[in-house]
Image 1 (cartoon, rainbow, N blue to C red):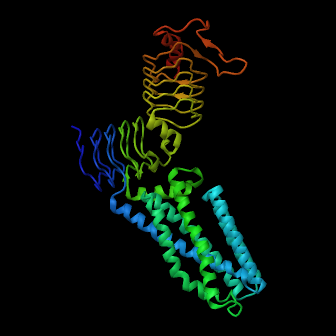
Image 2 (image 1 turned 120 degrees about the horizontal axis):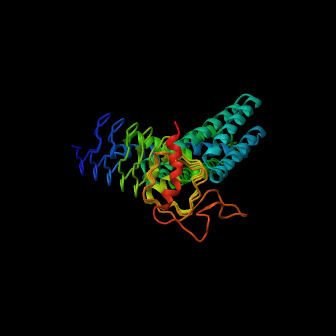
Amino acid sequence: MALDFSGQNLRGRNFKGQDLAGANFSYADIRGANFTNANLKGANFSHAKAGLQRRWAIFLVLVSWLSSGLSGSLWFVDGYFVLAILNAFARYSIIGCIVLILLIAYFIFTIRQGVGTNLGLVAFGIAFAAAFAAAVVAGAGAFAAFAFAVAFVLAFVLTVVAGGFAVAGGFAVAGGFAVATALVAGALAFPVAVIFAVGFVDNETFGFAVFIVMITAIAIAISIPGTLLSIYITWQAMKGNEEYFLIRNLAIAFAATGGTSFRGADLTKADFTQATLKSTDLRNTILICSRWHQAKMLDRVRPGSTYLQNSQVRELLVTGQGQEKNFDRQNLRGINLQAANLADTNFIGTDLSEANLQDADLSRAKLKQTQLDGTDLTGATLTGAYIENWGITNTTKLHGVRCEYVFMRLPTKEDPDPLRKPNNKQEVFADGEFADFIKPIFDTLDLLP
């Protein structure tokens, strides 16, 4: 008899390697539970709540705040280097100009191109600073170049880390709190900035009061945009912006470490209908015919190489609406699209082997070279589908398929209805006639070794 855990509090429980086939976890709280390598064939997780335990979520947010504060401090320090522009000595003024140009370029490229582009920009900044330091006369010039390079790189890294932990913790307020944290940390860094700035600004030229005000104004002018940029990165990553996929992947990896783990588990025909799946590790899982209808936060799981890594596929699984979408040449082996709307959808060269397409609407779908070994098409609608060289086998289930006509080739402008079957456009297949039409293909397959 299958085990019944429905409605139970299973937070942090260890089910590693256990045989839980057919078990009922509906409405259970499985946050932080460990199902690594478990047998969960046919298990019911509908309405279950997976994800982080509260203490891990709090830890992630605290780390986000700390990283944001340190990042703000370093942006503050970077800001003081800009003061070198005001120095009477040319070599120090050059340093300030270069720093200002690099910071402006960094902000522009981050907003327009995303974090990935900045990796190259940071590398350029390090190389440029190192080369400049080697060329500058020994002393404060070389030190300034190296110091800025270190501060700039650390500020960038901490900005990325802060954004990642903020997304992982799932608290939007983390970004807002980061501003205050960064400003406080920046204020703490102020004495250090003053000490270093003595080498850049001539106190005899400027009064001490003006000197202090200028350092504070310029340094804060850099630290605030740097901190706001961290919030912007976090916001874009939470929205799923592909330009910030590094932050998103980092966040999901952080969160999944303390979240629910199904890593390596067999989830064949498991039901996750309306389950909450944020911060869930699904790497190396077997997902044959698993059901994800109306699952919540499926975009926050760690999918590994499963079909869940594709955002368009995740949306299709949750909503059941894939009309006019393009899934050409994707590996969707074992996917559960029962009763899905797939009209006018492209599956050219797609692997749909072992998939559940029962009662799916595949009207006018392009199934050229689609692999359908072991696929269940029982009750599916294939009217107007393009089945050129489709890969059905003697294990493909076509019982009760609804089909009035099909096309044996893909359409072209010259021939929008290529090789229509039945040949007469005024005729359609009667009930059961499509099976008779396709039967010779199955008979041929049965004769093959």
